[in-house]
Length: 107
Image (cartoon, rainbow, N blue to C red):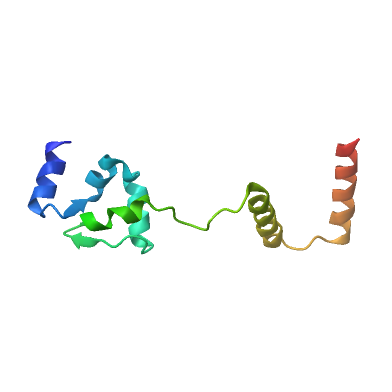
């Protein structure tokens, strides 16, 4: 533990921890922690220009975030659908060319 982290923690009390200190405890990279704060996943207090996290909220950083994964096949299907849905529809000529390319690749 560095003197800066100790001084920062001491200056704001033992219950408010700065992001770098929390990162040093193993709760993730400082950017990841700040991102979770910005998304509202972890409450924090802005002191000056630094976020402080209450010690009692550290458990929120150890919980997974994002959608729960059911299995890899479902994740892959959802990802493929998202990619395909993001592309514009193909013209008849583009479909024919794609069919020729795929047929040649399968030989």
